[in-house]
Image (cartoon, rainbow, N blue to C red):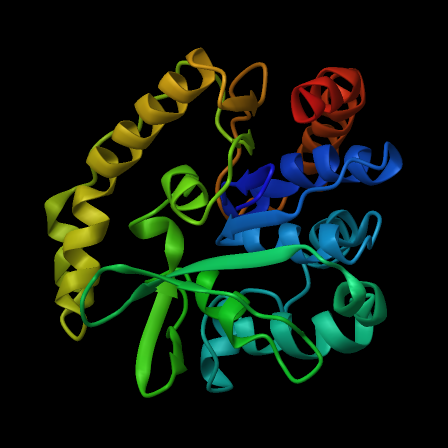
Length: 280
């Protein structure tokens, strides 16, 4: 049983908003015994637990436009368009390394969400160290269509946001009494259906295609659950005050910097409220 938990939505580079909120948390010494992240949310979770101030900000701002990060040239070199081999290899370990000692000594439990490519169901990983690679995070962030997925234990996994975009229910299932939820879409947002023809892209993984087409149903249901929990006092929600108007693979660093600053300001402004919520 955990006194509280932190739930982090993904959103690709849009998640730099979450990075800003979490950097404010680090400044204000707001901590949680349990953190669950999906897709880019799992990366934010890892840097937050390791107290790597501005690490996710710097990765997105400084390297989103790097040819090794994403681009068709990566495909010619045997990688995917979004080059998770480089992102979770050289970038994560040499260029912008995690504070491994801080992560290892933390008492915070990390849960990363990924989607099983064969079943189309969510699976949950609980990595205790990042020293020998981070396949669980790499899988959680492996967007279908722009990556090849990640093989773990003989099974190919993809982005967890396909089937559990806002893993609040899992946080409660894992024993959290109350949660802080950071969303990367503004209040009132609803996800629209995807063109069913997208399933043709995923002939090798038909369950992934089905999940992509049905994602709007899952996502909007989860938003309603978040709202219910907020109303009954078991969740405190932090989210953008207006639509961010950026894509998942956004490269405009001026837009991204503004989004980071928005999250950072909201994190600071609500720090006392969050501490009161956690201590109540």
